[in-house]
View (cartoon, helix red, strand yellow):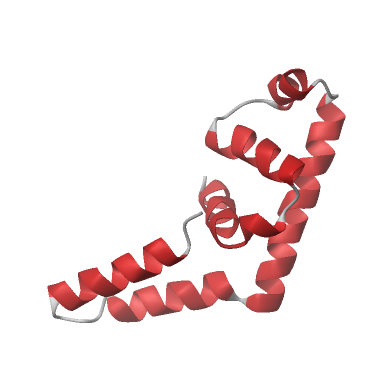
Length: 103
């Protein structure tokens, strides 16, 4: 389950760099919990075609994170923000961070 959250976070950060097909399949699989077969039926492609596109999307997201480290840095910042004692400042910074990575 942690893997799903990780991929969803990577998608929030780097998703716009995927192809439209990869984004559609990713959303259907990870957000809507559709199976490969259901996605294939939806787009009139084979289960294997869906699997390959999702694999390519995951590989791309992981490659981008490996190169750019945005997810890692984002979480390091969030950890430091959690150490701030002023709740108003903490809330404001967390809102900025969270809104900065949403599509």
